[in-house]
Amino acid sequence: MNRKVKVVQFGCGRMGSICMKYALDKGAEIIGAFDMNPEVTGKDISVRTGGPETGVKISDSKEFAQKLPQLKPDIVVVTTQSLVKDVYPILKICAENGINAITSCEEAIWPYNSAVKLTKELDDIARKNNCTLAGSGAQEMQWGSMINNLAGSLNKVVKITGETQNNVDDYGIAFANSFGAGMEMDEFNEKLASQYNLSEEEVNAQIEAGEFIPGFMWNSNTWLAERLGMTVTRQTQKLIPHPAEKDTPSSTLGRVIPKGQLKGASQVVRTETQEGVVIESAVKAVVYGPEDFEYDDWVLYGENEKLVVKLPEPPTVEMTCATLVNRIPDVINAEAGYVPTSRMPNCTYLIKSMEEYVNL
Image (cartoon, rainbow, N blue to C red; front, side, top):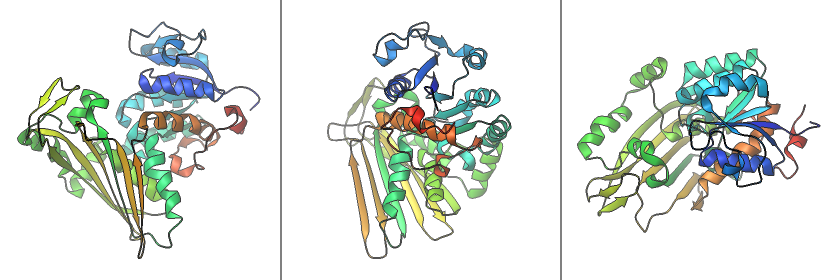
């Protein structure tokens, strides 16, 4: 491409701000930004990136549908919510206008096994208007590409297990509630665990009705299976509670969680494949005590050996933003439709200015 890649940012919170900075660092041009927070709308994007003024003001997100056709970016970066149903309206607007989009939405990494109808609708619209939609983030690298590449060092893979731990207090009240932080066991069983103790028939019925809520690993496991060339035959998920061993203060809840009350839980997803390989991974989210830290640990089991990978305290937010930005050329270059990044080349570091990687 003989000009800079034009980017619009949707969502100017912590991740959106970092994405804009990284995109500028990689030689892209930010031509628009949108957010619902009245404290930042109307202000130059420099208030979020920390750089010099650009003349580009943050618009109210309600104006996105009206302004996007006028802006005509090469891609929109969406950093808002975690479920496809929540980012669907924004992705649909992009697709209807023939504009590529990439999102940090966790479910969007491989949504064809959870948000089936919405994803197919987006795929149809994107194909019709010759643009590409995709999801990415730290989970692509930590839970996907890294494991796929390491599998290449084994003669035979029998099983893959993984666990990542996050601090509930880093991600807000909605995240805390989804992992049962501060709940009594009875409330946890009634409100959360019952959503996970479902038969395959019940899960399929929820998916068909568009009501299924996948654990964070649900879609990433399928991304990894596809990247490894495997066919998923069965997938289940469960939620395991973690009671506090001692009184634990939570900044998000604004109180102390007493001993015995839940400090969080683990979402565990088990994926079985036609090739006989099992992928079992978990996201453990708890209110941290002084001894806790973020980690991402994996084990690849071979015939007579195992390969252990430990990432202590990975910079997940920064990794998510860098992956989204480094993926931009691949999304622009990809075929039209809703295309999981498991079907794209490996995400690589952009040492040159971004436009030099775009095949237009």
